[in-house]
Length: 390
Ligand SMILES: *Cc1c(COP(=O)(O)O)cnc(C)c1O
Image 1 (tube, helix red, strand yellow):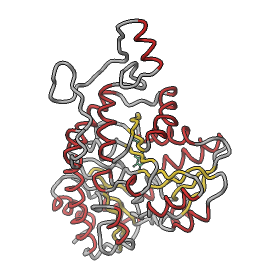
Image 2: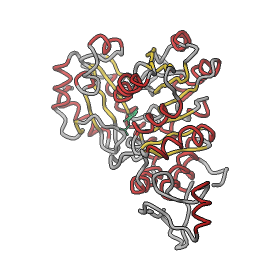
Image 3: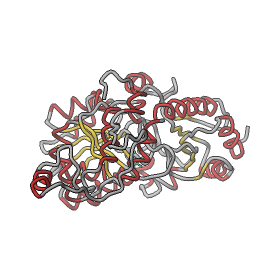
Image 4: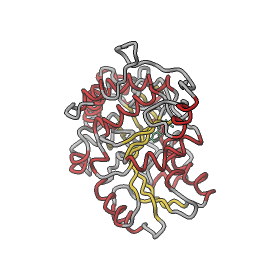
């Protein structure tokens, strides 16, 4: 890769490797294994696969192209791709933590991540403390001698709280812990956590990296020694590998990432302004608004607000009426698609939280979350008006 290439150019070009056929688009290598010229070469490649390919559980050219391109976009030394976002998170935890270790996580992270920490990691003697993402002092206060990892999503879902990545890095490194940032909502098009101090960045590639709701995928990025020595052995021996087909689809997704994030952020901002002015809407939570309580920090960390807008109406009945009035917007909890989606967090994604925990996380019965796609935003507004009125 040419080091001078700007983001958009990397998104289209970085990581490309051509086979002897000289294909222009990336080739899709649907092969489980690779052949060797001799016994000696097989032995040598098994001992150190280096830049050669052996077996697609841990090395495949199409997957390698995806890893290299995403690493170029996140300014990371290395990347491993995984079968899903959850397997990226699991691989990271199993690679970095031992029984008896302690983990600090933001209290507003993806629901399945909470389940992973509370039910699976707990069985292996790894304890998790949840803290306020917006208050670095609560992270500092939760630090123990055995704290190995700080885990955060910013902005948070669905309440758009922002964590100060540089401040969390200071707290982590003052005690020899690592900072892991799930960059799913912003993608490297809007936020580069490694440049802000994160040791590792995690992606659910299922969301904006694909961007078109087609395939599952995940990735972990960061320093070469962490990826190669701590995470790669887990991937290689336990096998949550990204399929070459999905890697090929994701390579195509990355080519339009900058364009999509820019346009979807612009659509989301327009929707957020429209909702703010609507008499039935009591509050709009969107990082791109000047009214966001952490607007200064947003400007420091993100180049745009992203595609996810949450807002509050009077009560659950009003919220459900808006959802049921949607003819265009899809009623689904997925996000990061060209199609706009709507969800009622209190009864879906966050429905299994105890009511007190939901209140603490700021998720009221009247809250709705819209992940804005690429439709014309006027059509999205009209669709919400069916149930919202006005
Ligand atoms: C969806 C999501 C995940 C999990 O990713 P999958 O690809 O569904 O396994 C993790 N973190 C965040 C923030 C997500 O939105």
